[in-house]
Length: 453
Image (cartoon, rainbow, N blue to C red; front, side, top):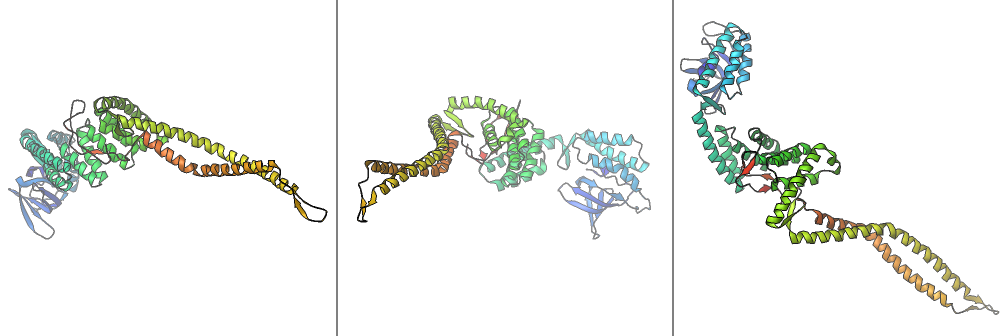
């Protein structure tokens, strides 16, 4: 920013101002304009002379009494302060011109008008010279393009470092390049990946959201936001991002595998949610087409969120049928065994009592007072054999009843393994994905973080 944009007139001192230089240095203190630039005096009295061409921006607060004895009114600064704040984040100089013209059209006080006219001249100069804002610096379109070209080269090298798992090296390269190209979507995408790896999920989300704003059709960005939102327990917003990813790039295996993982994590009650219903519908439609391609081209079939060969899939279906039969039998046993054991106990009591009666009847006392025992009837021995068999049968049934919880658990585990395989993780895309048209991907897609695919 050149001197005219500062709004310091008549040799006045600005109290509490901040001057930002092109090299990133910030000088804070009292500011006095000179013919060549400015003098900044800090709290210790140290003076720093700054050339106008080295100044990127200046934020004066209020002006005190000048050396010549003239005074600026705080109200005038307050009038134009709102405009300065409004244009602080503007990157299109035409918008800055419009803001200042609108301010001047409100007939401000003479002092505020004078400053606004000077600052309007600075913004108009930027328009006339075709300047654009890159970071905190106003540069020509040619310089901006050169910065973007340089940023693209850095992004390519950083992507290679990420592929090699050198996240620290990638972060150094990306952070350096972002100073010259703070809005470069590729750099921001890689920054999001790096932050995700550092488990800084909120910051990673913000980085991906910046890319989303400039590339709404980038399926990889929506995918990564879906992963982050699920990890931060924002499941419905996460599903909404997955829905955008499926729209941006239909039948994308990475996205659909993540959606399968996400839906598996939801409680059964969530299936009534309208967002979930929409995502499930789109997933089922696209996954059917993907499954047909995977089977035809690779001989693979979906099993939960993963893919297996046809032979393994068929074997798992046999295992599933076996598990279903076991579970059905265990449920039947759990219902019938207690009654069977109870009936055995009743029969045992009856037959045991009958045997005891026969023993008593076979014993007596003769005329001399001696105990005499007659031979037990054949029926006694038949009952004895039946009691022994029934006792053994009861032991087996009781043991079976006690084992049912464990057997049921094993069968249910067998059923789950044959129905679907889930890693419990959703993976981000780590490589830059460029988009064209309706957001279809161009180039190779990276591996994922978390979970085997």
